[in-house]
Structures are given as structure tokens and as C-alpha cells.
Image (cartoon, rainbow, N blue to C red; front, top):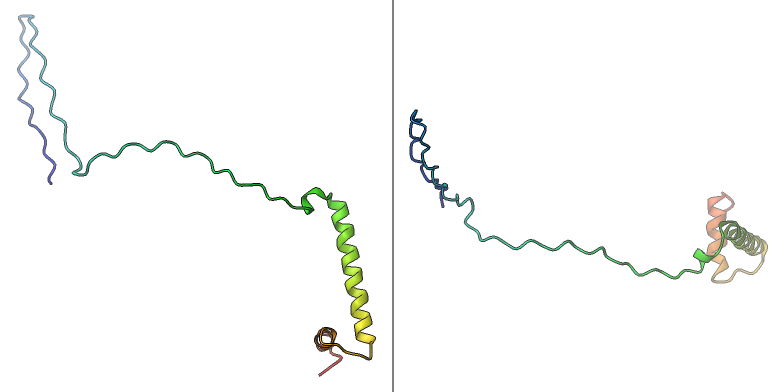
Length: 107
């Protein structure tokens, strides 16, 4: 639909007699779009995310580093025992072979 504008009547010349003329009538509103107006949306509420319960959040950072150190020490000890063991199980066999390939001890 094309945009239509109402035409304003030409302005009357200013009279010197001092009498004021009536103001021009208001122009008709212009129909800019053909789609109906939609109501405004209410401002969205901030989403509240549920807090996750984590045991590690309650542990101070220094204690976390201590726990990590103990876990790595145990993993290293088990790795050494499995490397020097004569018996290879289904769990330690592929693990030790992979380590030996990485460090160049196996083909």
C-alpha cells in the first residue's frame, strides 16, 4: 500500500489589520505500515539459574592443590609398579605398553 499524505491548504497571507486568522487544521496522520501495531513487551525478568552443589567449591584452593598432589603421587607409584612388574593384566598391560612407546622403550 503506498504511503499517502494529506495536502495542506495554502497559507493565507498575513493581514496587517491585526486580526488573527484561525490556525490551520491538523494534518491527518500518515499510515506508514500496513501491519497492525503489536503491544509492547514487558521487560524480561532475569533468568535465575539453580546453584550447583559441588564439594570442590567448599574446599580452599591450597587444600585442592594438596589433594591433586596426593592423587598424582599415587598414579606415579602405580605406574612404576606396573612398569617393573613381570605380570601384565588387562588394565596395566596396554597402559604400560603405551607409556613404553611414548618414551621409546618399545617398538
